[in-house]
Each structure stands twice: as C-alpha cells, then as structure tokens.
Amino acid sequence: MTDKSEYDDIAEPELSSRSAPISRRNLLIGGAAAAGLAGAAGYAALGPKELPRNAKGQRKLTLAWNANAICLAPALLAKEYGIYDQFGLDVDLLNFSGSTDQLLEAISTGKADAGVGMILRWIKPLEQGFDVKLIAGTHGGCIRVLGSRRQGVTDDIASLKGKAIGLSDISGAGRNALAVLLKHNGLDPNRDVEWKAFPAPLLSQAVRKGEIHAFVDSDPIAYVLQKESGGDLVEVLSNLSKPWDNRVCCVLGASGSLIRDDRESAVALSKSLVAAASLCSVRPEAVAKVFAPYAKASVEDLVAVLHTQTHNHHPVGRDLHREVALYAGELRDVGVMKPNIVPDVFASQVVDTLDA
Image (cartoon, helix red, strand yellow):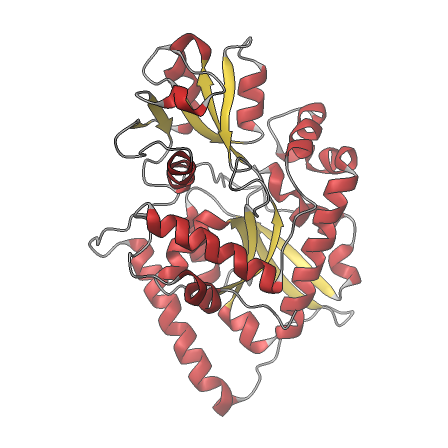
C-alpha cells in the first residue's frame, strides 16, 4: 500500500520565466540532466545494468504520486486491482509532498522510477533539462476557479475583470493555467486581475473576508468548498474550459534511466495507467471507494468529482506530442516559457512516443 506520510501536493511549483539565482530546484534539475548525460554516455560501455525484480520475475518499479488528488486515482487503482501485475510489474507507490520539488527530487535521486502529476508542473522543469520523458496522459480536469457571488463574481468570465484572485503560489501551475485561459477569453492576466497569495487552507476564508473575490484550487477540495458555500461560490473556469475542453491535465513521466535501461517496463507502466484510467471513467463508484481512505471527502463527493473529469482521455504517442506542443505554445505566449521556444521541437524533446 501507499506510504501515507506527511506528503501533500497542494503547493504549486514555481514556474517563473525570469532568470533566478541558483535554487534547490535548479540544482535538482541540473544534477538530473547531468546524470542523464553521463548515464547515456556510460551505458554502451557498461552494458545493460541488472534490473530489480521480485520472486515472480516481475520488474519492480516505484511510482511517485499525490495521494490527496482524486484525479490520480488510476495510480492506486492499478495497484489495488492488480493491473500492474497483469502487465508484469510490481509497483510501489511513493506519496510525494509539498511542491513539485519533492516529485523532482524523488526521481532525480532514484527514489522513484516515474511519477504522475499535472502537466503544468512538469513543463518548466523539462524546459530546463530535467531528465524525464512524458509517456502517457491519464485524464483531463482537476483545477477550478471559484468566485464569490457576494463579491460580484458570476459564471461569466468577464466578471473576473478588476477582481483579486487568490492562489497558493502566484507563480505556480494554477496561476499559469488561469493566465492562459484568461488570455483566451480576452482578459489580460497581468492587468485585468490582481493576484494574491494565501496558504491553500485559507483561500475560502480570504473570500469570506473580502480579501479576494475568487480563487484557484484543485479537486476534491474545490468541489467540497463550493458544495458547502451555501450557493455563494460559483465555478468560473476550469482546466476543462475552452480551449482545454479536450486536453490532458495529468501525465506520466518516466525517468531517463528507465527509458534507456528498460523501455519495455516503461511501455508496461504506461499501458497499466491508461487501463486504470479507463476503469475510472466507467466505474467511478468503485474507484471512489478505493480512494476514500486517502481523501478529505465522502465517497459521494468523490464520485461527483470523477464525473467532472475526463478519465476516458489519455493520449499517448503522437496525440500526447500534439497536446504538449499546444501547451508549450500557450505558455510561451503568456511569458511562462522562453519566447524563442518552438512548441513542436520542444514536444519532440520531452515526449517519448514509445513507438506508439
């Protein structure tokens, strides 16, 4: 079963396009990239290294995931329902905490062979050279923007103009997602709204106090807060709003070493999660019951959240390449990624189609 430690992936990653002094993340990314180059160079000379297997001969892998996120239930479901086993894998789940730094560290230090999480948490580290390849999408939808009717917000996106929007990290994935969606709907994310940072548990309280008018959060937390607001909170946007209504949200990333040393197991892991995601789309009640011990929500609420997500959308191969390129172009246009980035080239560098 999952290591249920203090891990909590509510905090967003810092995805700033500006140059910054050396940070823990830059060291992690730089070290992982260097290790990847060294590993690739030495691979031919040393030959394939021995890969860990269990007594049944199944390949042992560790997958990093966030146990608070119902959208990542396929990672747990594949273990509970024996799907990994069917694909010849023995998978341990590592629950990562805090910001994306913990996910990056788990992979760069070899504690995890792969990880699953929001694509917007992966893209900037990948631009900086992190030694991971994206190999599969698992679903669409998990971030929502909720606004207070009492503060003048409606389900009309234009009602956000001139409003203060709260986030747990102003330069994180939630902000960047909303920046793209605001721009698509004719609002300037830098001039037409004000961004305010609050700890995630205090966002709804800040709305009640009038310190902000809307906020960004993920499910199931956002769903529960809206349900318990007495009709005050209204959904304005989500990462299933146009143009993202048929776009992947969370993806599976495999370490460069897994891709180089054991491509067959990377393919098996990808197929396992896609199969589990498909099960989420057709049996949400069963999935909610399996996930309930990890969630601060009822089974009923979890089922409702699963119905809002697109677990039948899990692109691989060229389909995943296309969606990553679309994200790269949109993030470039709002200043998150470098202005000279070529989306299709970037996608070719960070997506491994696994010969799909």
